[in-house]
Image 1 (cartoon, rainbow, N blue to C red):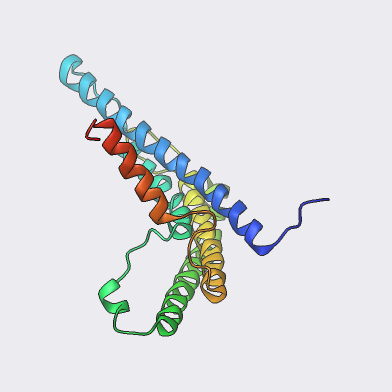
Image 2 (image 1 turned 45 degrees about the horizontal axis):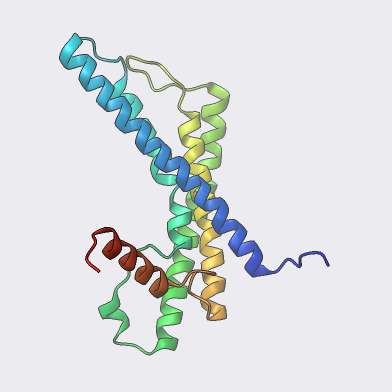
Length: 192
């Protein structure tokens, strides 16, 4: 029997896809750290700085941040106000969270919509940043566009989760995972 596609299977697939974009962000963090370390070593010991290091690191921060937004939203890794939430009933809190997610969706969709003509202009004109190493900026503008599109879509999934009363991430038991991590840590320290 073929696998039936449901909203929750699409939700899980999107969460998995968003995770891969987050892995790209992590890879960029490693690249930035290695680049900065190599630049520091070549500058200090060989008096030969890598040209354009500051610009490269500055621009690599853009995809590093924006490609990880969607996964953080899907995993509900955002800042919340538990003190504020304790003042209201569970039903009111659900609608407050829904309103917050809806505003997040509107913001991300608006930024993505406004980013499309910028990416088009940067791509067609091959606009470059200037500086010691002259490289085009459209890939960085495109990473902002992709990040905000993914974030807008992730807000849609999270809003559906709120409306359906399934706010926990599918297949993820936070309590059980925390207990497993704690048990593993205690065993590694030979405390048991």
